[in-house]
Image (cartoon, rainbow, N blue to C red; front, side, top):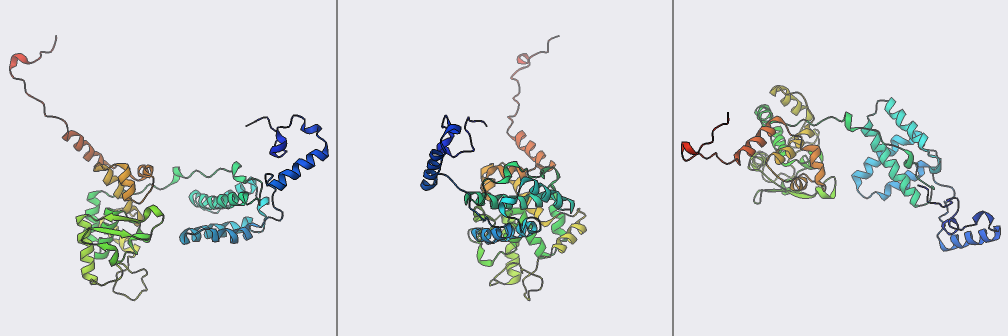
Length: 346
């Protein structure tokens, strides 16, 4: 947007009516004052290379899992940007990085995760005056929604078929994910006996992906029954409900993803990722008339708009919604006498 100012000059000189005719001494004095008072933000010399800046950037990330995720993206970008100084990273080079990653078969979503890390790195570099302006003002992220896999929403009939053939510990895990929407790896599979309160019928999530994921999750009657059965099999003093790895010498069961795949095959259901079990929770709550605000709180999200991503209505839920609508319709009243009825005009 053109605001009438000459942006080649610092703010103190931009509005001067005769800036081009100003004596050099006056320009120098004004610039000196700007620098002395800290208003003229000079770019630091000898900006770090991408690799050096990555080593400085990662310790700024406090959440360990986020730091690990960022470290993976930085390693993906080192072959392209590692030896370049931050000021040498241009929009064209970033576009080349995108094209190169896509050509090697990397999905748009994964490339976008790398770009998001790079954008954050360069934004902080701009604040620290290592660069004059982030190149991301001229960089677009890749479109990924159109090719993103839609989650498989499990119907009640499919659920019963899975539970009929699944191993006992896979059965418990299936019910747990369907009726609590815990994150499979970060919440459900690290569940400890002390996290489950069978008196108040709640699960306390102490570690999660985000701060909003720290919550108390209510237990349904069916889920409580399954968890009690698992605890009874393992013993009341078991520290974990599931073993973290198949190599761990323990009586605690290991939730092997292949066992769920086998259960799906035996049930005659096409394979889907175990994570999809939790996507069924939101549409079932929505079908029961629960508001988006409470659904968002129960699934561990801070923004109710996320519900629209997961609450994809399936035919069974649509029919249930229609039945609920029909149930509030008042019964038709019969006329008191035939003479009171209205005749159709000819």
